[in-house]
Length: 362
Image 1 (cartoon, rainbow, N blue to C red):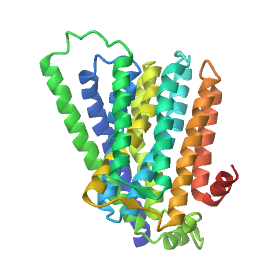
Image 2 (cartoon, helix red, strand yellow; image 1 turned 30 degrees about the vertical axis):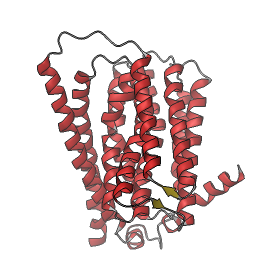
Image 3 (cartoon, rainbow, N blue to C red; image 1 turned 90 degrees about the vertical axis):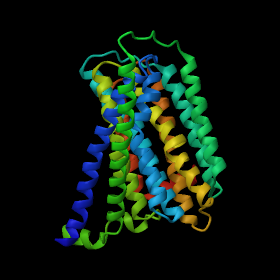
Image 4 (tube, one colour; image 1 turned 90 degrees about the horizontal axis):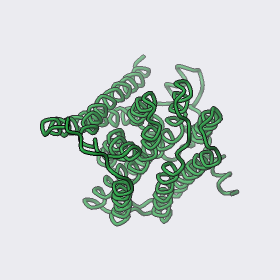
């Protein structure tokens, strides 16, 4: 019973923290609607909504770096959160959004220019990070480069379309309230992310084999025995990533129900760019400034697995964009295709040797 509680309590904390993340991001988004009321459609989803819904990833990544003092553990857990969240964002959120749009009989025309715009920047960012990781070292300069990519991306978005006219109903008092909501939302999301990280660390110290044997009568937990990232990284990839992606999902659902397809679909793409360029790079930069560059060359297996999952993320992003390019409207096929890709991703988490063989063959 004690062993079982060692799992149930942290999982309960993760569930509660996920709900608190959603509350914090909702408050943030309410403030963002006021502060960014002049932004064009599509830009709001890719910037303000994406930043608001990605606060959990930022705080979770930051805490993984500084709570897990061993650089490789903190980095792999932070990257696990970002990769897992990125896959969730680009597959599950569009699948849910498209399903809602179909059921509500909203416009299903694919806005290829917007999706390919954000998708192109996303792939560049992913390739850059893969290049940085490939030599087994991560440093402050590489973090600054990723940050610069995001700044250029935001400047381009803000200058690519005509802004809306100023709303006379948005008074100075309302703007002040909007900024206050932004701050409160950040504080709640940050606290919830800390709870999630602590819960993942508790789970990482649990006796997996003992729990698996007691509950299911098996001698070991399949997959974990060969997971070189370690238990904490896999928990980040699965649990922390899923929990931190809930706000992205809810915000996109709200936009989809209103028929705002541009914002609903630009949010997950913009969130992924934010996750890689800000949520991962800023904690990385701060960590390497106060400590030293992160070196992975001493653990070849760890380095190879990180590279494999980065490559898998790039392939999934390309497949997502390809499925969008060859259609003029979203269809049920897209829902089935995205869910199938996500299922394959989960499968490869527990069968990394097969993923390695496929990548090496390619």
